[in-house]
Image (cartoon, rainbow, N blue to C red; front, side, top):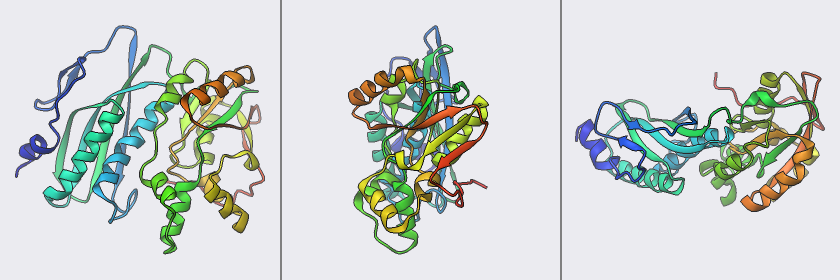
Length: 309
């Protein structure tokens, strides 16, 4: 099987989006963009041994590769539309490809996004997805809009993926729910769209709350105070902290893919209503100030968030 047969057999899916003029099969894809909208694009690479273990199933690799990119689109308050896939394989394994492609197709259907192109090559296992979305012109939620006095919010629970990794590295069996948080994060697309026009800034928590909130602080030229006692925890994480007095996994652990966003206090009731409609837990964890620093009440700050290099 050559490269073109691989693409044809596993990734040339029927396209139902009428805005796509040309998908897989030419040198590039073509799609229409409605007047008054901007294109939002993001790219993430997942590498074996760095972002997933060697024994991670192809189904989980496919899902997570898509989900982490969708999470970036959610943080911008945009609607996800199209994606490209670049896949590097150490060998041609048709069984692996069959399971990977079926999972990717299922996830793309769930989140209503279309595969419009990509590339394949030989090498260490790497999956790179470029995701594209649309948003009304000048309406994207940026990291740079936080204002003094804004509340700071987090969706869902945080720290469970880091707890899962810790258990695996210490040869302890993680709970099923923790494995799901690591391998199958839920991109908060509905919430991102719902808070567009309300949130003053937003970031997805991929490298850890401390580091990702610091991106907002730096871009917005503000400071922040958050309280560890207000951070949203699963029962499993709450038990871990009670036993170990260790907040580092919650503050610094990566792979949460929840949204951290800011909004004026006057919008608090509306945000809580949105959370209820979206059926997502949203928690106020602190307040933006003018200190130009991030202060975390109840945390000594010895651990560090995830660094790529």
